[in-house]
Length: 358
Image 1: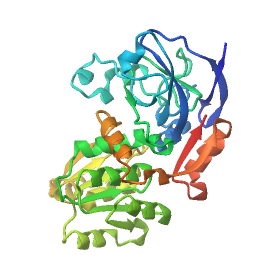
Image 2 (image 1 turned 90 degrees about the vertical axis):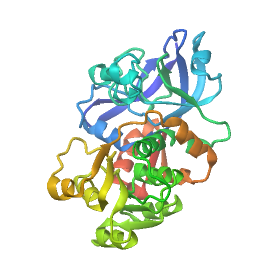
Image 3 (image 1 turned 45 degrees about the vertical axis):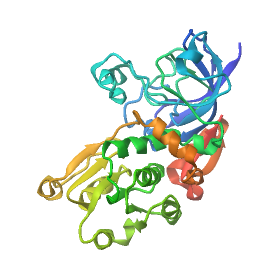
């Protein structure tokens, strides 16, 4: 029987290659040949054990691949064909709990109880093992949410479907009206893609606050009207000047640092909205709620995962208006997974988005 190679985190900060059997497919299951998978900031948290992960596990939730095999009813169930390139949502919702029935399947009750996120909280000991994108193949059960990628979309654009969907979800939850001002805090991959999602939604101006020249320059290519390096020390004053003496209508915090989460409140105008989608790794954040929130009557929102956002992300990717593939700066094989993690964590060689090719 053919064996499948995968990268497995066995304990905190330890990862190596293992092999697993190809799964036997039930009638509504798919088998995906993974073409490429991103290295996400969440993967770094998982590698460090920040969220109490059920090791051993196969990381990777930003995957793209080809339908290689299917159960007898799977093609009709998932509306795909053998050979199609697909993205699969990272959450495997139960479909029966109250949040799922309310359409909030990203908040599935059973996710926390038993693990339902590809590459994040499903142990590789759970059969049939292949629940992460850092592997040659991915198992797709009947309740997975599968999306076909148009055939003209290049692989390096397609692999950004999941992170772009995270940004689209956030923008959908706190949508700008045409001409609303937006500040995106954090110039990492999610921040850059949130610039894209906000511009696509009609926000203007969109301002990006971050660091590192190469990332800010890319933000401008993605449509940011202004880019500001927070290390300059006068970001607040510059924002005020650009926005007519007020803050932004909507602020999206994507960096996941205590500093960024505090500053996001400062950047919002009175009566404005702050949407938190950056993850801190459970690090505490100290906020002066009176001055920073209540006295400004801010609306505070958060966004988690990418429910109901894949189709919007795919439309943006297929449209080709934004050169998001330029985010991908480094590519590694599974054999070099430790180097890929180090490159992403330390931003070696001006790394922005690192990908693995199994």
